[in-house]
Length: 110
Length: 116
Image 1 (cartoon, rainbow over the protein chains, first blue to last red):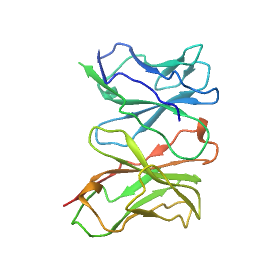
Image 2: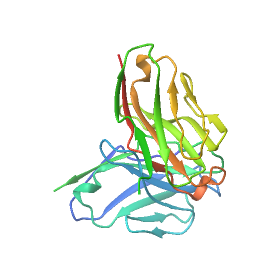
Image 3: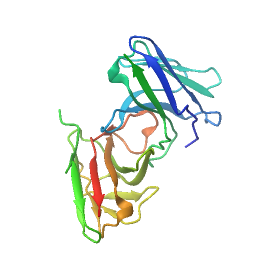
Image 4: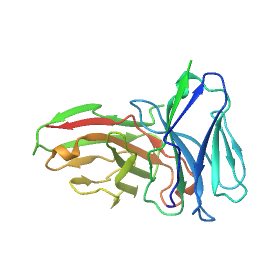
């Protein structure tokens, strides 16, 4: 799977929107962009995924650049419960699992 | 709605001991996998299975064995535990192994394993 680059950490205030960036300049045309998050002492949790168009679900929105070389996970109104490590992962074909980097540690201030 | 269940949640072993980490899912998922997560790191794939009777190695398979006799269960065996295997182990599943590009994986809450 192609490599992604994320900031090590970000900080935001409660009840404000959060934009988490991810660069993936070597993405292939068939790679899906997945986001997972991992709360302290828990397993990773699926957040959202997309291919070309922007996506929305109950947890977040995913904005994908037109050239697909970057994407942004948007939490519309952060809560303290959103404090976690967020992973941006590209999924191509094949069954060999997810490739996790170090992700972005999101800190939410009350 | 159990999802992916891992047992035990915590375990301490002595070097050289063997043990089996259990993973069960009740979603009839074909694909199951095991990851390990070391402090401050992302997850690394140990072994995976695309269906009952089929397993394959991931990135870090040495020291671990798996089998998949049923769709529901995917146990991970440590044959002779070493301190380097101290880690948090996560099991995951998803509906179909071969077409995973657009399918999310479901993770268990992990087994925290310490090898003394």
